[in-house]
Length: 212
Image (cartoon, rainbow, N blue to C red; front, side, top):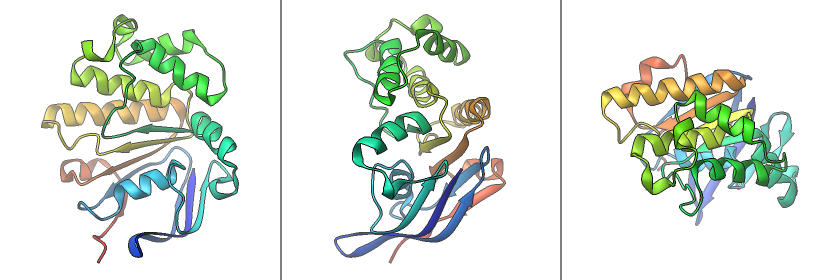
């Protein structure tokens, strides 16, 4: 679950995000809609603990992120928060399996190759475990990014514009993938996008207006 309490963030004195109160229960799936500049990526980074808001409190899995030390926050993120960014940021010098093992290592949970293979099998990528990112199609690379995000069984799964550059068929396949992996972990899912095609898929929606 997560909760935002009177969260505000500004860049150079200009408000980029204002949310008075928002509570998402464990296992819920949320869609955050808004045009470019409305604060979607800022919100996602705040929920992931990558960005500290200018004001307010962010609670994830019962922990107030602002009260965690930097060293604690990094490990907490690795264990409880999975994130799929617009740029996939796969490490090109590592194989697919090694990218997932790296996520385990930085979480402090210890490397578990069995879990890596399990996730890759679920996503139809077991045969690509020893491949390098440049050897993958875009769709395969995107699935590897999802695998990396869920390999530690996160409490919160975040995705930033995962469908906006995809055709209709691949858009729905990506949604199916994210929702299925969130259910497998009983994770709260939050997808931030301006893609209106997927609006009907989500009962829980949060609309961000463009900031003045």
